[in-house]
Length: 446
Image (cartoon, rainbow, N blue to C red):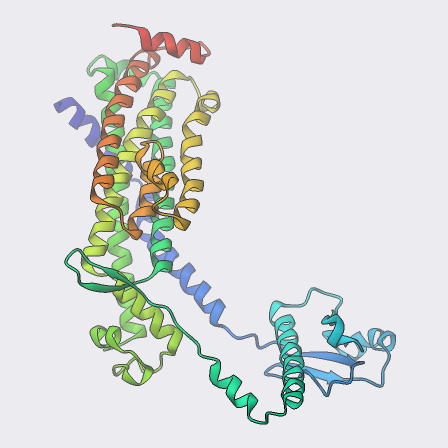
């Protein structure tokens, strides 16, 4: 056992001391936060590009679209379409909006341009035209009904409804939750596990191939058993991945805390979570709109200590379980070949369950209690990814324990098989290995 600890220490320290590890560990949370901040900024950023759109209105509608913000709609009804097209460059028209004479029947207008128009321009022109036609039809129906106050009565029936999701706790207490946040947490957690299994599993395989090709392993095997060497490499690299993940959590928490303090300085989070209307917002959060208030309350209601601790605990267990399971297979593949090129034929059976688990995750998000979700989270080759998608929605304790026990048992069984391949293949040189050959190794008794 002491020799395994020595190998674990060597594998761990040799990787965490690398400059690439330190750079990736400290910069990744900053880069992720920067990317998300940039995406949010881009979504909230208004389009300030000035555009002039020529409008040829062949219908009887009275100016159905109006200029707004930086988009100007210029009516040129006395100009033919061909003349307008010829004058586009001279008049600096961004596009030509043609409203046909039978717009009420065809319900289709045409927007011509020499380049692809933006979604905002298309949406603005279309929504104004649609609203104008709907208003005309509504006025016509009201006139025919001979009810002058019908418009007010119809407006009174339009009642926007927002939907909150509330979870019952084990003691009967209620707590606000968010389906969208639960789905995001599940997919992000499962994707990180998927990425980590591949990233660090391949590191184990490459390390074995490198030591085998350099004949270093012949010296190492003279002092330790092949099984000890394999387990030392697997556990050592696992500790590297766990260290990196813990650092990411700590740094991300610091960045989020700083970001919250900058965006909402001095805000009482309890008062913010309990506010039911914008008028009840605490001091420092008065600038929030209704959508931002709902998002903030969803986040505060979801990310309590117990919830976060449960997610992190499950993540660490299934990350380690999934990594140890697949790394044993990666180590066996690395020991059976002489170079990385030869690994392709053996990698496919290993990668298929991982890829399949990601696709199962999409189905699980739609039906977390279905049979596909259950079996996907119990079968060890897919459970590390699928279970992480299910956990934010709530998983019965017995299913979670069954998944954990099955994963541990499968890891021990796979490690036993991988060790039989490893102890034979690690000293096998110059021979192209096939599945038939590996089957012979598994049947060796010594």
